[in-house]
Every structure is written in C-alpha cells, then in structure tokens.
Length: 219
Image (tube, rainbow, N blue to C red; front, top):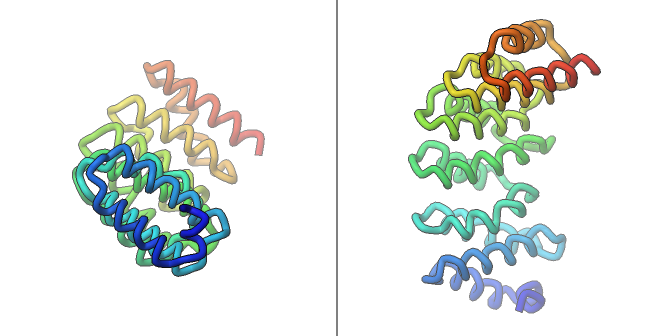
C-alpha cells in the first residue's frame, strides 16, 4: 500500500484520512509513523510531503495521540519543514500538554541545525523563555537540550548561563551539557561552569559540568 501511495495521490489521501479518523491510538501511531518515514525517504514529491506533515501536525495536536507523536518524531526531526509547519509546531510550546511540548522541543532541536531554518530567532526566544519560566522542571530540562540546536548563538548561550542557577538539578546538568557543545569556549561560559563545578552539591551536575569544561577546553 505504501508503494501505491507513492504513485497515486488518492491512495495517499485515503491513508491520511484513516490516520485522522482511526479510533485505535496504537494503530494510528503505526500508520502515521510509516507514512512519516516514507515522506522523508526521497520518494515523496513536495506535495506529498506537505500533505503528510499537515495531517501529522493536525492529529498530533489532539489529546490521546502520544503514539502518533512518538512514531512520527524521528521523521519530522529529519524533514525540511516549511515556515508554516514550523509555526504550527511552535504553537504546541505555548500549550499545557507535556507530550505535545516534548514533541515540539525534540523536533526543533534538530530543525534548528538546518542552515535554511526559518524563524530561528523567534523559536530560540520561545524555547529560552520556556527554560527560564516553565513550572515543570522536565520541560525546562528539555528546553535546555533543545537549545543545542542553536549552538553558538549569543541569546541561547545567555539563557543557558541563567539556567545554571535553576533550582532543579536536572535543568542545571542539562544546561551545562548543552553549553559543552558550544563551538568555542567563551570566557564567561568557562567561568560560570567552573564556578558551578566547585559549588554545586549535586554529583550529577558536577559530572556534567566537568565534562562540558573538558569539551570546551579541547577546542
């Protein structure tokens, strides 16, 4: 059926309608994952890719579609999303659903590495705000991880330096780990990491900080 969906738009459209209307969440996730994989395989034409991404973002925004988000995440991280698709994905960051925000952050982390990434500054600001202010420490941690896609950008670096003071140890550790991926060792980054390494009471934070210092010092 996937082979025929490559050749006949009506077959592909039927699959997409099934994804939108499938009551079994697990089956819906499998169908979405397979179509998402095909969409980035090189066989899909531009219109086919856009149709598939639109359906996935539509259904992924619904409650109870965690399986679809899980199965489609790898392909969406690899796809060349267009500005409208990135805008739709960014809307999930403003919601309250944990898995929708986790999904969007994971995709943005890889999308931000694309040289043609559109709206880079706006997304970086939104992710930085999540990391600084969200009530859920896991979302703050995932936001720090997502900023790895903005490696080297001044605003992202400043936000991560602030996150080294986060009350949650997992956020501090992730911020240190992400700063260790920066392309160059700015003096203020090394100074902040060394201070954290010497003062933080959590061994996981100290270990992440030590690794980041070693990585930066070797560049």
